[in-house]
Structures are given as structure tokens and as C-alpha cells.
Length: 280
Image (cartoon, rainbow, N blue to C red):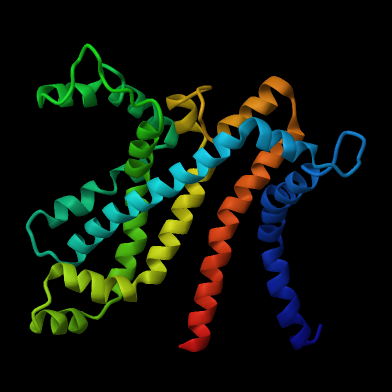
């Protein structure tokens, strides 16, 4: 076999197992779920599944979008603060914080959900802490098995992941830029807003998009905290539709709607990065 042909065939041959796994485990089910959301049991084109999804679960679709977006922004604020502290601080507590913030990364979501059920229960640890501070009446404790509990759970779980990505972007910033800003009187907040975040904006965007996608696709935490209450997330509705009705069409329609939620942000990010690459 000639060398030029061999140089083209061998890489493809080496990549074939990985590409096959990606196709059969991810791409094929992804395409199939979209196609079957438009096809009825007789094989005819239909929009009934989407009509059913929007009619029955419209409130849950909106809830999924805004709670995922809200938790992403809150987690981003916390992650930026932690990453900035780790990048700029020389405090003796830096090593301790650097080790502590990664702890949630190694905890599965099902364990996080069970922890949050215990922590946020009406007479759980969180309400007991609020009681000790005199902020609540233990006879009528606040209810956290709703969007508030989801927000706390998502932020606690996703913040360390975002810190790793954002901190990586901050670490690539030359120290001379930071020292130059400080030499002309910029405080830490100014350095963060005017130097670090603009330079590391790509890392921040990646972290937010990946976190939003993860929040939209999470099933365990919403299921264990909210269950069948209304509103809940799309993932709980998909499971309910399949388990109790055997309705794969509506379930696939809900899944396709979740793809669109994530896809909008992904396409926007890719377009913005492409434009900056062209203009820069």
C-alpha cells in the first residue's frame, strides 16, 4: 500500500472504534428521538406529540428553562468569586479553599439529592440553623422542596465544575497585566471586572453553557425534591410519560424541546466565538 494512502487509512481505522461508539450510543439515539417525535404509530407525520407536550407540560417547560438559567447565573457568580480569590489571593486559607471547593465534584447527583432532602427538610438542618438565628418559626418552617431547593442543590453541585473552567481561564492571564492595573490604583474588583473577566470570557461562556445543559438534563434532583408536584422539570415529565403511559412520542417531543433549549445557547456561543476569531 502506498505511503500516502496508508497515512490516510490508518488514522481512520484507529478512530473507527471510538466513532462507532459515539454514533451508536449518542448520535443514533439523538436522531431517532427527534424523528420519532414527528411520527405516529402508523408512521405518518404528526405534530400531536408536540401539541400534547405543550398543552400538558407547558408550565414545566418554562419552569425548566428559568430554574436552569437562574441556577447557572447564581453558580457563575459564586464560581467567579471563588476563582478570583484563588487567582489573586495570597491568604494562608487559599490551600484549604482550593481543596474544599472541589468536594461536590466527586459526589453523584443521586447522593446530592438525598443530602438535599435531609438538609432542606421542614425540620432539617437548614431550618434548624435558621431557627437558631431567630429567622423562622419552627412550627411553620419554610418549604424548600420546590424551586428554592433546586436552586440550592444545583448551585452547590455545579459551582465547583464552573470554578475549574473559569480558574483555568484566569490562570492564563499574565501577571504583568494584573500588576499594571494595580499599579495605577485598580482594586481587586476593578481588576476582576476590567481585566480578568474580559480576557477569560470564553472560559466563562463555556462553563455557563455546559452547566445550563447539565441542569436541563438532570433527573434525580428534581425527582427526589419535587417529585410529581407542579411545576417540575421536563426530565421528570419524560419519565412519567414513559413509565405510566408508555407514550414515547410525547416523551421524545419533550426531549427535543430540551435539545432546543440547550442548542440555542450553544449556537449563540459558537457564532460569537467565530465572529471574534474572524475580527481578531
